[in-house]
Image 1 (cartoon, rainbow over the protein chains, first blue to last red):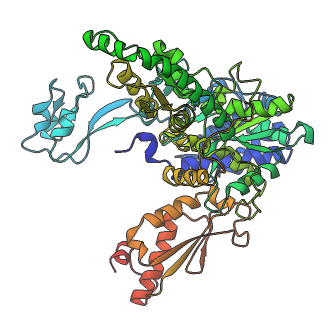
Image 2: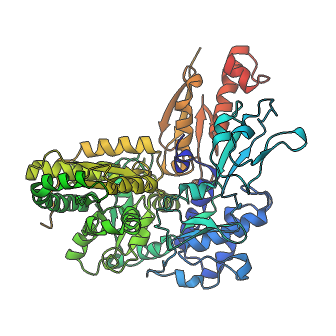
Image 3: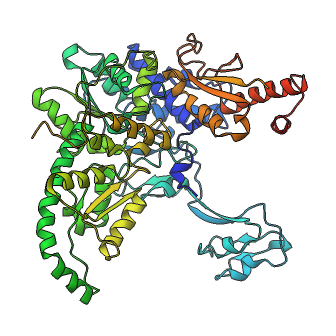
Length: 523
Length: 99
């Protein structure tokens, strides 16, 4: 069974529909230079008050759409109970300056269905059978048959051991976990006192997988669309540069060539666009170098240490590893949950920051917008050490909304040529295993590092399990790659393409690179 | 029998409105494979009105606006059933599948 966040992915559902309609709606609103107070009219161009499209009633739709608009403007949520029009303070969002502030990921309570957190329940398939193995295997006596009818599980007694689920001959018992919480790899989602989902912002690492896993679209991230649009509409010199994540290939439809994507980004007003794979190349070289130096030392001392560990199994193996640093959600999760390994995660800048730095070096006042599949980058760009380099963050989906609102068809425009591409390995950063693969191959070819012990995991739950295994000595690792999203960045919440096709396209594009091994212009 | 050409617009507006899901559903459907050829095509005369009626799909020359996988498959089955029974209506979707 696929993980909860993989089941709906790549499918165009009404949740996708409403999100995209709002993005296109507010983009047109800004491009048409409508007045901020007109925002109260915007919901009515997105939903039809006469016939509910998404929900039981159009008034609920209206309430939800209003709140989604606030978030899309980058502003804090305004709920009905706040008794405030959505236009309240909205003029603050009509600027080219940074408006976005934490929390990035928000629960829209008006949209939340208050799903039970975690329940083992008997479905209609129960046949009231004679054998009733369910109640026989139940270790806590939680199962009864009221009035000789179907099995009933008392939720206050059930310990969710799953024995009844396995024993039922009709597979009529199932476990229902709230999708947002099931998608969360850091256990940040619980219920508030009314039963609505609530995000513990101290635990949340902004991976955003809950936003694409809630089947009621009740969780949403904020966007910087409006502020970026203001920059794009400004005078030539103030327009931003775009830097685009390696996972961009194949995100805008089968007929949109990489060169056409670049051309379209320039057409909407960005001064230029660079591949973040360049920055990935710099990172690969940096980490391969660090790894090679650290390993030489460590492997010399290694054999003696391994023996002492075997003699004292309780003592944790102190073998040092190098952790990748490009996925901010993974970095935060690793540092929070395994503080003893905090120093193992490379202190290097991420490919995003490296790429932005190359631009700011040439032009210190330039604005840089990162375009990627990632919600966590919105959080990363708020960090004081990243803020000077990356001004704003846009997802592929938000960028596509700008294309649509500006009537730009990527299938019909002539593609730009890539003047000098990043390396094949850098372009491979988009897919899980690609980062560790790039570092390992570079370390081998450049420094002769052989037989590298590599551990890698995608999704935060798997990442945590991997670190636990390293901690208790089950896995030996010298290089560790962590990715918050399934399949790596191509599985990010801000993507448009299905995972399998996206992976294939990234591979094809990497194959067209002029070089396999990285080079860094900064070096 | 004559194969039905299903042309799915893959221009940016239609792609953004779910054209990819339609193509994937059709390509995944082994039952349909013997009846149809799926083509991803560029914009068809801007029929979508800047995305308002996206996605646009043509099934055997018949144009569908605001298409969904369900609508497209329904149209295919309608044409297939029509070709087999000589009647354009009357057969249910599952009858068409088993025809």
